Image 1 (tube, rainbow, N blue to C red):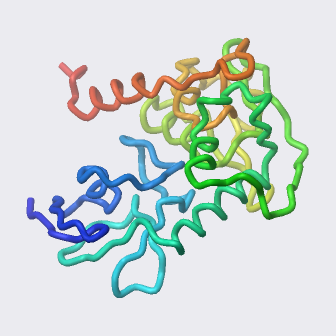
Image 2: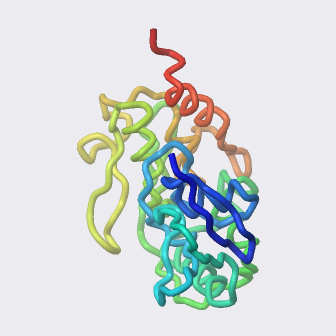
Length: 238
């Protein structure tokens, strides 16, 4: 496999030809914010938080789905990028009902961490305050649509790692939302194995363990990383 040499933030680095800009940056210790990305799951470039500037291109491009190229010049931190990222975070807060002070994931939320990291101390857009439901039909877990950011981590981890495909997306645009089974209460979805991978993949408090109270819900990413590594290395195949 050939190696590509590129420059990220004036730092000369090398990466294998199939690597994405995000892979190459992280390998070099350069952090790029993401929300929909989880190592080991398919790449969708949906949240757009990993947008970067590439020399010679007027368009911002998602680092998680853009492959490295020889001689590529990438900038991951600029006033323009910071402005876009903060706007994206503000829009996520404005279109949902993210009240951190009463959220089960308060203090353990990736959206909250991103807001803090980008200095979001207020939202410039009008809050939508949508009427969204909470599904507590599953005996172990709960789903709060108010806190869902449509990153589809739950959909992909259930499909690609667990193989159950209990989760999916329904609706379009403002009406888009995650569903379980055949758009039925989660507890009635017979395909659900109650493995909890969706709970640990969720970046916010949208999917949680029942009984969790404010700030108690923590995501066990180590469980997912262990399973994905074992799957990639075929450690459980005789």
